[in-house]
Image (cartoon, rainbow, N blue to C red):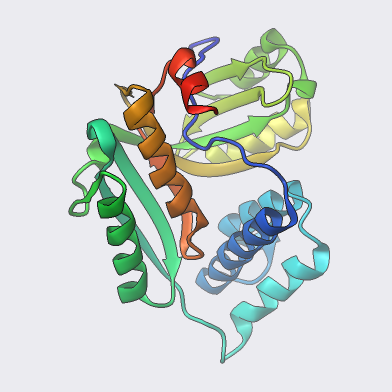
Amino acid sequence: MAGHSHAKNIMHRKGKSDAARSKVFSKLAREITVAAKLGVPDPAFNARLRLAVANAKSQSMPKDNIERAIKKAAGSDGENYDEVRYEGYGPGGVAVIVEALTDNRNRTASNVRSTFSKNGGALGETNSVSFMFDRVGEIVYPLSAGDADKVMEAAIEAGAEDVETDEDEEDGGHTIYTTFETMGEVAAALEKTLGEAESVKAIWRPQNETPVDAEKGATLLKLISILEEDDDVQNVYANFDISDEDMAKIGV
């Protein structure tokens, strides 16, 4: 099991403005509704819904919003969302995976394709880049959960695969990786020793990273940002690495 890694996380953090928070709540609500529709509308008996609700709570989403999203799944007039994955390449040959929940596939596909083409990328076929990623579980804890050794010990005991600790006081934290299949049980074991996690979710983790310079990195980050702003897009992953020096040039 790896200890400390300073690899850049694609899900770069954003400011908690009201507009950004509203968009986050909207995406969380959509995931809750889909999870409730795919199984029973009770988190106690629906693992995906349980994770969706836990992640919503970790983002301080009001209880009323959560309950409304669950009830929406039972309504006959509620939207039917399709889960769609798009894959392509960004500037510098960086592999990009986009996960969406949409009630209009044509609209979403058109928006995603246009965003790629306008920002130095190209949308590919399904499975054109996903072989360069592993589907794993990601459990995130704040630095306040404990020092790196304590979290490492807890992760090993819980059956995790890997741990990365970023000790930056502002944006740092502990990221624990599990196999996709054991994510739920590892998260439950960790909660007993470290408390409630900031988030627990399945992600696409790059097997290797593609270095990009400041120029291509700036365009790539713009591509990712625009994709993340799309209401239909839930998650964006990419296998890039930018040096601290080039990040500073970009102003990130």
